[in-house]
Length: 330
Image (cartoon, rainbow, N blue to C red; front, side):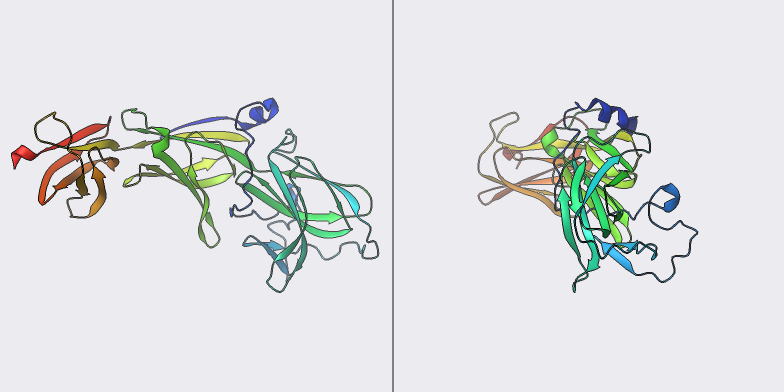
């Protein structure tokens, strides 16, 4: 596996790299990080502070501390106040120019323990109007997410979120630097959450730029639909794009039933591929079935009418190959 890291901030400044800004999927269920600690400019209590018995609030399965009790009481003011929200990748870095989705929730939960959505914006710099009070602010940037508390006071309110986000681009090849067709390759991305492994993204295309919270992720690369799978762990750094190439020990294989070596393939053949343990991992009907198999030994079975022909074969990582079964051998 080869890794190459580029400066993520430079891409943001240029703003013209194709595919950098991507459409946001509102159904993503990636975990929401807790508020930034106070020592880093956020509203969550510092690590060494006693949070006491304050109530908690849960967003997308993440518990947020209720924060200090001594907030100004603006309950007598109900007129909406102007609120401006923006995000950047570091304290002095550039503002994120697009691709953000902002959501603001009430801190009070309903009977189901859910928070009411009170405002939403898909502008990079969100301009909202909210009555004074306390809210939960959530921002998504691709698959990266962050949340923090928002206190709205009388008069203009401005809040800038420092977003710990990086980029990830994945590719894969067959051992020996043999290219893999993009349509046969997909990636799944997972992270470890408080309740176990969490799916961040599935069926990611090769070289697709994915925005993620900084951290360590488990990557699964799938070459074809059967058993050519590679797993790895990668660290995504804040403010950088991490590029990774994973290598498969596998090959594409096509099957042919012929009456003579190099002859014309016979149609309407029922095909089965089994492992040495007898497990069936592939079946198809036709003259030229093809699939992808991991390195190893296999048995191909070709049924034509009442006759069944078979051949043992080995998959060695490399370019596509054909496996012929001769009817004249039997």
